[in-house]
Length: 111
Image (cartoon, rainbow, N blue to C red; front, side, top):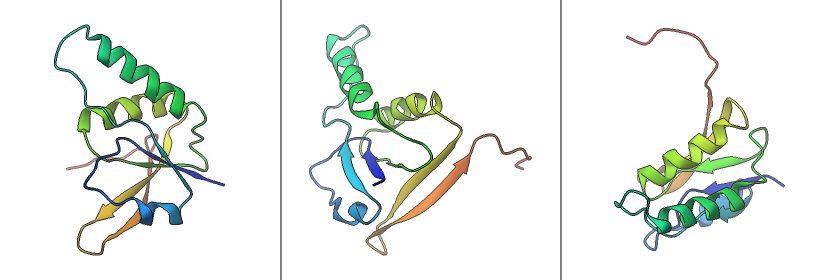
């Protein structure tokens, strides 16, 4: 069964719609600290790494949620495992997720 890795669980969001795509796995709830060398940030990174360990880019999804910094950390870890990623994009208008796939190896020019 595919998994949906939610980058950061936030209290105001409803993740039930994500369950249509697979088992929901929350990577963290904490916010990053602004302090360089923070022990909190080290612990946060270790939690994310452990929960993201089984991520399979061929079958799983990433659902960005919460802090953009946490989402960037998750993408850096995902990039170590592949170059094609399945994302779930939330639509406030439709109140549902849609799948978006990116292949970072695609070539082309953007104007």
